Image 1 (tube, rainbow, N blue to C red):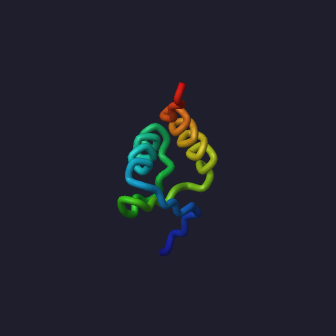
Image 2: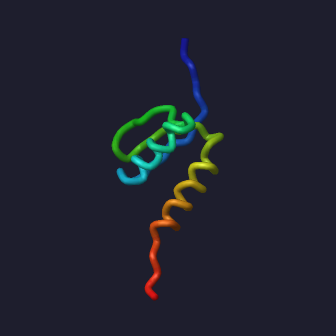
Length: 65
């Protein structure tokens, strides 16, 4: 029997993939880890993932004084 799962295909760089894998350990949202730059995730978690990545990018951005 075939089982269909609704999800979102994500393309990212390897560094962002590692962050997503770490986030996935807290709350499982990755359906399939396809390769070093592609993930298939549960669509219901997309906004939370985007917010977490934005927050991380903002915390790693420095401005010249």
